[in-house]
Every structure is written in structure tokens, then in C-alpha cells.
Image 1 (tube, rainbow, N blue to C red):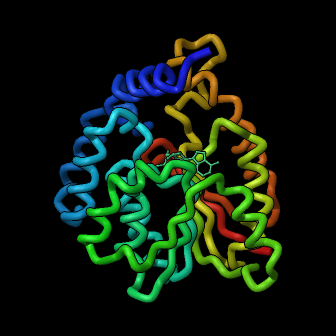
Image 2: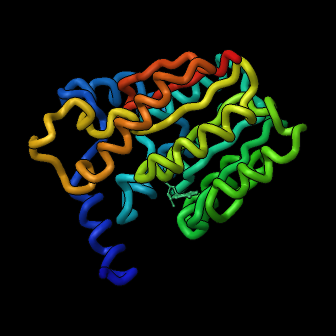
Length: 250
Ligand SMILES: C[S@@+](CC[C@H](N)C(=O)[O-])C[C@H]1O[C@@H](n2cnc3c(N)ncnc32)[C@H](O)[C@@H]1O
């Protein structure tokens, strides 16, 4: 069994070997999107946090810059004010959310790892949006259980972004069961990485990185479950590694 250190080292190697996670088949086209639309509009703190995160050994976990732009647009379109994020890492999608929301908005942000959040925190503070964030360290599920216990939290969230734990289909389904009560009717839940490196359409014997193959079946199951849920409308978008936006309708 790998020790913690060995596990971290092997994860670091695994993450550094991939340059980006976009499911776009053309690198040139992805670069075109970044250079034409995304980078020229990227706020300075987002750029600073992106560059800081790029130096971290687990940098493949971060949300990409094109996803920042998408989240920013989505949050503003729905006038989101009360939001939640599961899976923060160094905080790139969290900062994107905090910058898009009005000054009196709230984001409940959860991650089992505070250290990585604290790497990005100075940038978030400098951007003047830290007051919108309540960070909770630890697994998200017990926090969701607590929230669901209290009826006043039901139908109270405008937007929930789930970017953790995709290695566990059961966890995702457990999240979904609770989040559906917590999000408003008409509110949105975004599940990240639902196209999983494009592996969702690869034949079972296709060559795949080990971690891609390992998580692929979980992602396929999650996608099936979301598509079959009558309480939501869904839209699966090929932004970055795939994001499924779910709109609660009942
Ligand atoms: C893909 S990263 C999140 C990336 C982040 N959204 C960003 O923009 O950089 C996934 C994160 O989920 C966290 N995580 C894993 N299991 C978790 C759990 N049970 N509850 C909360 N966070 C968890 C990991 O520590 C990791 O930081």
C-alpha cells in the first residue's frame, strides 16, 4: 500500500503529465478560445490564482479559465446570491463565483483539504471578496445532512457547484439526493467533469490513463442517473472536461 507521501508523489506525476483537460479535440481551437475570448477578459486576481495553482503539483484538479468565464456568465444570468461549492482545491472556481456574485452574496465552500484553500486565500482576500465565503473543512456529506435537517435551508440555494468525489458514484448520488432539496426550484446544480477526458465514449479496450479508466464507470453511472431524474432539466456542455447543468423543475 502506498504511503501518504508516495500517493502524493504519484498523484503529482499523474497530474503534471496532462497539459489541459478540455474535451475539445483540437488543441489549436482550444488555444484560440483561450486567447481570443478568455484570457483578454480574465480578471487580474483570476490570472494570479491560475498562475499560482499551475505551480502546484496537483494542478490538474483546478478548473480551467474557460470554465471561469462560463460560471461567471451563468451566475450573473440567474442573479445568484446564495451558492454552494463542493470541492475547492486552491479556489479558482470559488474565486470566479465570488467575483460574479453581488457584495451581500454568500458561498458555502467545502473541502477536506484546508491547506490548498489557504494557498489561494491571499489572492481571494486581495480581490476583496473573502467576506462572501464561508469555508468548511471536512467531508461535504455530513454538512449537507445538517443543512437538510433544517427545513429553512430547503429551496434556499440559487446555484451549487459539485467538483469533488467523482471517484465515488454513491457519493455523487448521495449529494444529488440532498442538493435537490437545498436548491431552489428554478435554481441550478452544476456537476463538473461529466465527459471525463472524453472517455465516456471510448471503447472499453481503448488506451486510457489509469485514473481516467478507473473513474470512467462512475462518471457513466452519474450521467445515466442525472439523465433519468424527472425533477431536473439538464444540459451537458463540452466546457473544459464537461459540465452538466441541472435546473430543478419540481
Ligand atoms: C477537482 S478538485 C476541485 C477543484 C476546484 N473546484 C477548482 O476550481 O480548483 C476536488 C477537490 O475535492 C476535494 N474533496 C475530495 N473529497 C471531498 C469530500 N468528501 N468533501 C469535500 N471535498 C472533497 C479535494 O480535496 C479537492 O480539493
